[in-house]
Length: 495
Image 1 (cartoon, helix red, strand yellow):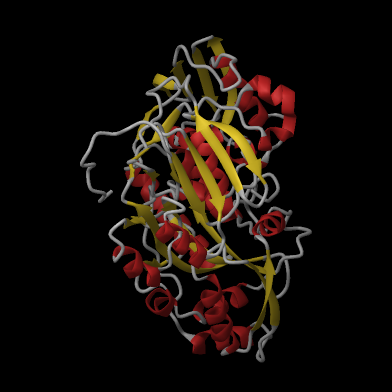
Image 2 (image 1 turned 120 degrees about the vertical axis):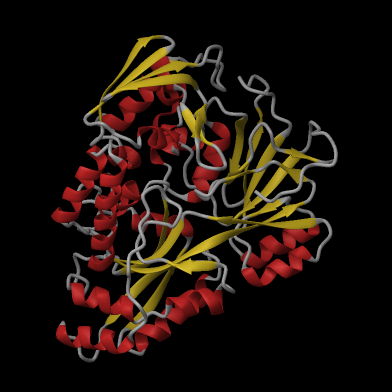
């Protein structure tokens, strides 16, 4: 990761204070859908398997597994207890997946319903998954936060209030959630793995970018997310601090509700793409710390293929608008947040200017992050949204497309906010999920990416490096390309 090895041996004790860019919205795994909630939940829960920093799969609550076609059998770790003192076993795994597959229909159900036919506990330490087809990405799905296992006893006690009373098997236990201030976690002294070094972690929601940098410089926090590029030199000049950059898997785009005019017209959607100088965004707004994105799939994701996208061509954009019946443009409203994305206002103002040049007048509608997420999670068939700022991170190309633009992924069951459905695309994705031969699968993925790119259910923008500010006293934080930023049993602080 580029972080220097510790000069001294790890020590126990100390509380990590972490400045997040937004407050978490839930800590109930089947409902986790935003980055802040993922980061907090990852410290509380475990999955059967998990990602390493290089995005390889390693054992977690499962010690080993074997696959035979559509049957996956996992051996479950012995001697693990949930934070409430109840025992973890194969039946807890079944209970979790029954929530995802059953009548509750939580947010993340759409990722599992098309895939899993049955989950069985063969005994207390063996669980078997039967999938509906041979799935080469099954372990990647299990390593996602939706595979995190909650205490069945806690769910029986709290129900959906588990969102604010999380009980997992992870290295840290939930202590308190003070709304609009912080979430506090404490060390799990009964953790099944190595005893965590830290006494605890405090996650503070600090939406203001400059406030995060000030808190880091003052020593009030030891880890800060989403540092703006222009602050990098300031942090690097401080001998107590360091910068970490990660080539993340998040792509940024502007969503459009394709069920509403004028976005029902492909020519309008393509025109909005041609009107944006994405190279200028990367260079002028983000100091070159990113790349142009041409669809929802990030460079570095499994199965990524480069596709042409939409080069900057405002003349072409105007021609397309005229052909669609909008020679003088049109007006629209775009939902934005109160700074949830780095340099968000500068980006949005740049987009407004670019679209105004082709006659499209876009008004910004600002919402606090929680309300923003509520609006994005409304069914596209009755959503009030026209346009919105958005991002997505996925390790697997096919799952990125399915989750955001699959016909059967409409919110609230899935993450398709746009209302986009293309049967040709869904047919390709279905073939991809059932194709084991890697060469054949890559060819199908290239076709799928080219199709979703040119159908333009979004204005494709950029893929940025993730910039983190850290105290040099902080060692071994969890930093993954999936945008996960958290702590585990190996994280420690110098005194």
